[in-house]
Length: 118
Image (tube, rainbow, N blue to C red; front, side, top):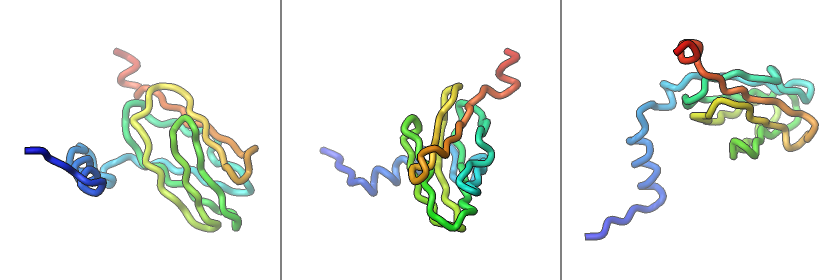
């Protein structure tokens, strides 16, 4: 017997297989104000999935984009968007506002302090 799943079924399988729900994920925040990311560098734990909430405080739309993270999210003015990321290996990951290419930031994935002492 051959088992065939469509895209929706695969999504359901992946959600059920995930040990954490979106509600259980740690939340980190970045704001866009005056066409700048704040904070410009965000430190997150490596090896862990997380939810990033990007608030656009400007009136114009902005786009959180990262080639290395394979993510892009348009955030209309005066609103916020959610980006799910990770787990990331220890290192630096650049992101930018694709509508304003000079606006850049970095996510630093660092090993938790307890893991560094081992």
